[in-house]
Length: 307
Image 1 (cartoon, rainbow, N blue to C red):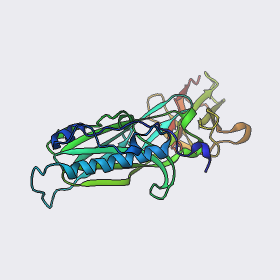
Image 2 (cartoon, rainbow, N blue to C red; image 1 turned 60 degrees about the vertical axis):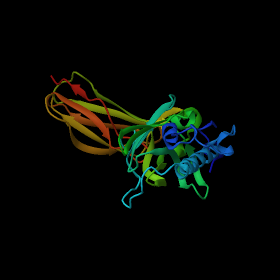
Image 3 (cartoon, helix red, strand yellow; image 1 turned 135 degrees about the horizontal axis):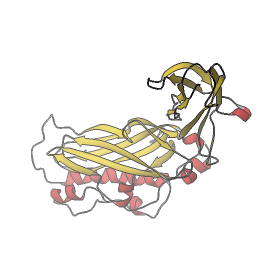
Image 4 (cartoon, one colour; image 1 turned 180 degrees about the vertical axis):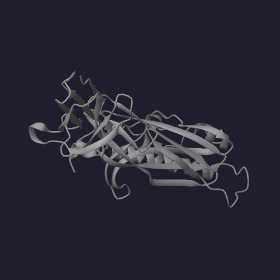
């Protein structure tokens, strides 16, 4: 495990969550944060401590709150609808800080004492077998991430800033998890894997069909290059030995795959080149389906005028 990619990304700040819930419970406004959560510490290890402390404090606030109603056996806190950037993955390029958005829903309790979602990569948080732990902008700023939808439902949104030039190396691409906890007057939920998602290196795919115009019967060459972000060099580099599909269509039709090919290596890293005989006006493009570390991408089609 390389030292430069381990336990970084966040700065230590005091956390205040669930102000409305605490006020409703009769406690002083502001979460009861432990000393470890308020210390001026930096790094992902400290961020994990603050996250654990905030969860414990929310549970303590629940325990100390007056019992507004008798608990029912059916009452239970449920976390659902967890998504990352509207799906199951996020992509980051080489230079710009990327905002990742996580949404989730907490239901089953009338009062929400606190909830938080964090992003992490590794095998086991409890045993210290992890590489990255990222808390949200809202958590760091002490902002409640949730809006109450109805009597027992809260819709929550958190954002995370990742700078590829500071925070990432190529080994960070791939599967990550979401650590998520929520405490309501009904019960508590605390899981290190509310969702597995994928952080991917941004991809791009060029495409050119030439020459054009071209005489009927002559040879058309379709050239493309598949590249992806390199978080070690902060540049784009050819993505080698990857399957790309050559797709074709008439000027008014829909694209369909006509053949599949593997991108080049060495001086031709990521490059693909195919030929077709010019018979009629036609459009060509390459398409890449993506991998666990690199998102799918489709090149802009290039139409050839055959005369």
